[in-house]
Image (cartoon, rainbow, N blue to C red; front, side, top):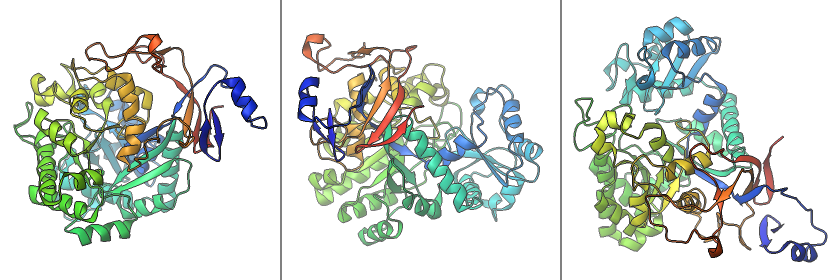
Amino acid sequence: MAVEDGVVTWIGEDRTGRALHPGAEVIDLSGAFVAPAFVDTHVHLSATGLRLTGPHLATPTRAAALAELRGHATAGVVLARGWDPDVWPDGPLTVTDLDAACGDRAVYAARVDEHSAQASTALRAAVPDLVALDGYHPELALTGPAHDAVRVAAQDALTDAQITAAHRAALDAAAATGIVAVHECSGPEIAGERDFALLRGLQHGVQVRRYWGEAARDAAHATELMTRTGAHGLAGDLFVDGSLGSHTALLSAPYADADTVGTAVLDQAAVTTHVLACTEARIQAGFHAIGDAAVGRVVTALAAAVDAFGGPRVAACGHRIEHAEMVTARQAERLGAWAVHASMQPAFDALWGGGSGMYARRLGPDRAAGLNDFALLARNAVPLAFSSDSPVTPLDPWATIRAATTHHTAGSAVSPRAAFTASTRGAWRAGGVRDGIAGTLVPGAPASYAVWDVDELVVKAPADAVARWSTDPRAGVAPLPDLSPGARLPRCLRTVSAGVTIFEAA
């Protein structure tokens, strides 16, 4: 493969390549595997960076998490992440726990799904009238508006330098896993405009597409939001609902383990108004929608935009749904017809799927089995883009691809080729790059690739799916690393973005 000025200019047999480019710098792969670099379509960079550098509470017990917090109690404000009461035998974090571990420090400790958190007495005191907000509890974790308020207060306590350092740490970590572009999903209640503006000014080899999750009132307001924030779209985490783990995803029927149907952050009128405003202004719109009732609101809003502006206009905007965990066959058919991108996280099924997983406890086994049905969406031509939702799950594209091919529910997986495409070409398209070559290595494409140390290259289809291509070696189908359970995942040796090396292993 020959690269000139950041572009792939030639691919072919080695002797011919050397003859055509006699003065070229030659990089011998020494048996390593080269492939198009990855794009992660849903991340939270400051939260990811703070998780990489701060206390990490994904511990086997509550006691171990408290010991981790005590080790960081000298910091001004302590931001911790990753605790999961569903796996702790000794109960959830309480206000008393945080105060005992960190004294009078302001402590924000996000649950693993980032949709609820525990906050110390000092942090709670920094939020006026916190007790009047929905989701408040005097001792247990905060959800809904109460959670949003303490998260904003914790972020406000950070300095600009701390935020920029977190951004850089997260982007460095992305480059080290073969990622050359990420989609930051921010908003007023997530990291705020200061964080968003600081990210806009950061120079790094990993490209950042910035989404701002604030609902538009009309086309003029949508345009004003884009201008004010410098966003690339009014999409990402514009919340219609919350998460299943925190019992805040919006369902059409109650949870199996709680007397609630979740939380509606945006009503139908607001969702529809946003889609209509963005479609009129030709801006990419999108929503965080996990529960079936939340997805239903988004589909209803998209149908209204199709009625108002026509299917081609809606498709041209490239609207998207983040997570889309509970989608019916009829909804998938309509989303595919309107070319709505589904930005999904296969690692969610790996973590929480299965007959005894968190999904089954929240919804019951029957409803849980229908979650994250990648095959259903693919059959209905819904454009798939895979991501991590970091820091909810790690920046690890090959683990993401493996999770998409080893789904807990038979018939819901996709092939490694389809999963790889959703992490490369599909991810570029979800971010508005629709030139037909981004995410590939062909003449004319940007030279954005990664070099990997791998054990074995194979051509496989999932055992429970129909392959649309032959696995016979004579068919010439390009192989991928062996991603079978237990196989060693590839290790990144080098990441190159448009011809520029942005990561190289020691």
